[in-house]
Length: 110
Image 1 (tube, one colour):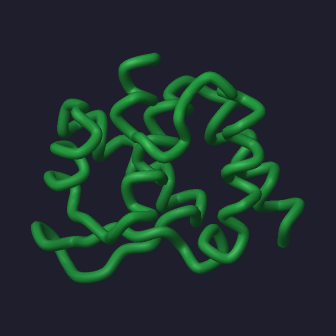
Image 2: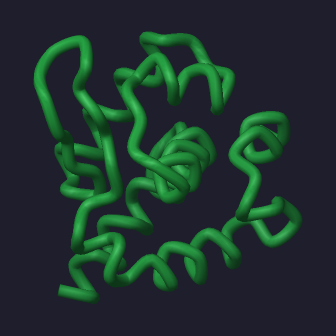
C-alpha cells in the first residue's frame, strides 16, 4: 500500500499541473473536514478549480466524502491519514522553500 500511495502522491503533486493547489487542499483538510465552499475560502481559489482538484483527489483515494450534494464534506482518506508523514516528506522534497503548514502560502508561490 505504501508504494502505491507514494506513486499516487508523486503523480498528484509532481507529475501533473496543479500539484501545489492539491497540496494546499490536502493541508487545509488535515486541519478539519470542509465542504467545497469552505475550502475555497481557506485556499483562495476559484470554486470550479477547487471542485476539479477535489474530484481528482477523491478519484485517487486521497480524500473521502461524507454527506450528500451541497453539504458534502471532504476529509483526508484513512490511507493518506495513516501515511501523512509520507505526504509531508514528498512535499518537503518538492517544495522545500514553502511552509507545509500554511495552504495560503502554497497558493501564493504557485
